Image 1 (cartoon, one colour):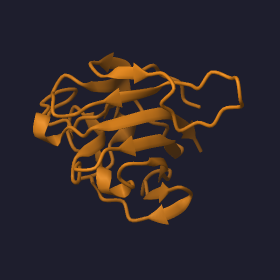
Image 2: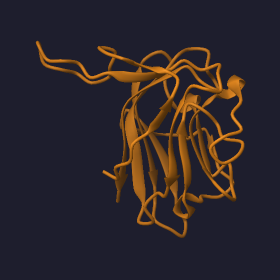
Image 3: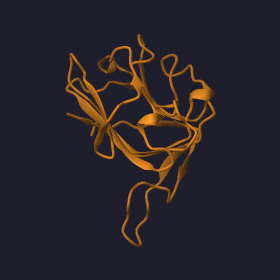
Image 4: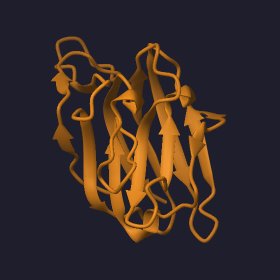
Length: 168
């Protein structure tokens, strides 16, 4: 796991609301809820560079109904604010989904999306992959400039649980 901490703006932890199963009597981990319709609710990792050897981003995500076309994942560099965007239609609305995005090693950086282990079309846009340049990873907002330029109408009502990046 390529470890980095998210910087949290707005939103809130929801103890007991989780995609993870737990044994009887154990504490259920918290998910993190970004309620959308705001430019202040998001999680980010500034100055982040994805591995050049290829990687997978995966975790449990829940998108509320009525959020079609809104971006829950955004990666921008200083030269490309749309390096990688992923919209909510890649997920099933209203329930927890295990989402994974794999990005192959350069120079092609082939990208694939998976929903609950099954390959799915990735309703995402990307001018050109720039993750090796370093930039900002944002959850819950689409960046129109590096680490900013947010638009409340593009912010989904979304929950995240156990999001990780794994190097290939």
